[in-house]
Amino acid sequence: MDATKFIWMDGDLVPWDEAQIHVLSHGLHYGTGAFEGIRAYKTETGTAVFRLTDHMDRLQRSTKALGIPFEYSVEQLVEVCKEVMRVNGLESGYIRPVTFFGTGSIGLNPSGANVHMIIAAWEWGAYLGEDGIKNGIRVAVSSWRRIGPNAFMPDAKGTGGYINSVMAKTAAIKGGYDEALLLNEDGLVAEGSGENLFMVRKGIIHTPPTSAGALDGITRDSVYQMLAEDGYTIKESAVTRTDLYYADEVFFTGTAAEVTPVREIDDRPVGDGTPGPVTRRAQELFMGTVEGRLDLHPEWLEYI
Ligand code: PPE
Image 1 (cartoon, rainbow, N blue to C red):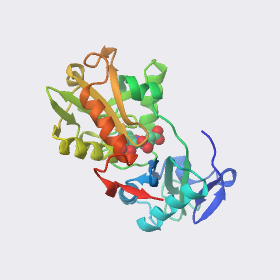
Image 2: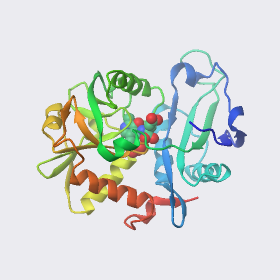
Image 3: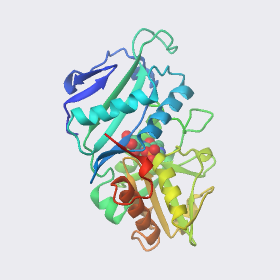
C-alpha cells in the first residue's frame, strides 16, 4: 500500500505516520468497531465518489447495531471523505472510514471508553488482480461457515466480524485459490470473504438474500438495479453449492472487487470457464456508471 499525506482523525487532518492510537484501545482487543470501504473514480467532469452518502448511512446503521456512539452527522462525514480525497491529491482511490472504541475502559464493557473516527484514502488497484477482472478468479468453498445472526451480525460491517472473513481468505490463498466462498450454518451460499455473489442459470440471475448471511452490499444493490433495468430477470434466491456447480455464470461484486468474474469453483469450471455475457454486461454497466461514461444513475456520483 502506498501512503498518502493525511488521515483525518477525530476532527483533524494528521500526517499519515502520526495517525496513531493507544495499544490499550478497546477496539484493538475486542474488535468493537465498524468500517466502510468506498471507491472514488476519475470521470470526465471530475472525481466522483460512488454512492458516498449510502456508504456513510450504512456506517451509521452498523454502529447502531453494534452499540457504538455515532458522534457526527452523515453529512459532516460525507464532506470529510471529499476533503481527504482533495488534500491527498487523489483523482481516484479507496476511502476507508473506521470508528471504534478507544481507551478509558478495561474489560469487555466499553462504556466509559472514548470513540474514535478515522477516515483515510489511498490508491487501490484491482482487488483480485487485473487478470481476475479480465479472465475470472478461482474460488473454493471454505470449511469456515459465515457467522450466523445468532453469533454476530453478518449484515453489519463490524470490524470484529471480519476475523471470520480473514480465516476463510487466508485458508483459500494457502490452498492455492484466489478467494473463499462462505456457506452459512444451513449450508446455503452466503457470500465471498469480502464480496457478494451472483449466479446465472437458465437465463435467470440469482443472488442470496441478506438473511442467508450476505452483507447488504452497495455494489450488489447497484448491479441488481441496473441488470433489472436492462431487462434481465433477477431475484434473491436460496443458492446451494450444487447450484453453483451447475451455473452458467458466477460473479462477485464489492467496492474493492467491483465486478469480478468467477471462472472456477472447487476446481470445476463455471460454464465454459470464461466470463459469460451477463457477467460482461454487469461489468460494463457498473464500470460505465462509476466512471461517468454511462448516464444511467448520475445520482450515485458524488463529486469531490
Ligand atoms: N460482503 C462482505 C463480507 C464485504 O466485506 C463486502 C465489502 C461486500 C460484501 C460488498 O459490499 P459493498 O462494498 O457495499 O458492495 N468489502 C469491503 C472490504 C474489503 C477489504 O478487503 O477490506 C470492500 O469491498 O470495500
